[in-house]
Length: 193
Image 1 (cartoon, rainbow, N blue to C red):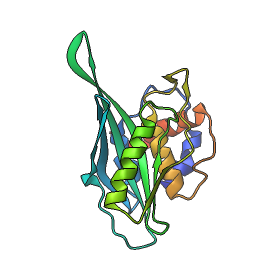
Image 2: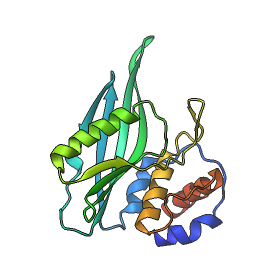
Image 3: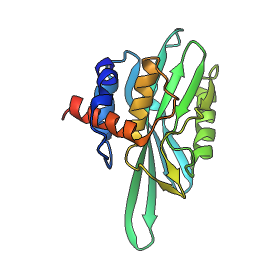
């Protein structure tokens, strides 16, 4: 992660359409408290279900766990019986010292945001009752007139947030599109498949 931070700004800012989620594990696996299992949120027919088997933390103080979250939205088209799936990346930061669980959502205004937060708050009230739940008020992925400008780059925003957070850098400092493109291109270059 340190090499990525030191070198990403020198990479090209060529616009990418997406960054695959397969890059999350290689980038974050250096961090001792990264949980490799994916916490999934499934949304279908206005119902939200959680696959919560992914979180297994030790309650000893002083650790900050990074948990990868995938939101899957299932939508059936009236003219097509095939169910379409949209995936979106988020992150959970579980701080055992401060007993907080914070969700990073790169987009600020997604349709199900309040419902997701309510569902997660209820879930963690049962599974980690001594922890408080909230969402970061930092949403760098652009969303204008109901359209995600950088659709497909939620993975890049999530990785950047996690890396900056773990490295104790300004994770919530605003940055421009060129920065996220350079960061994405650096990941592709440094973590080749």
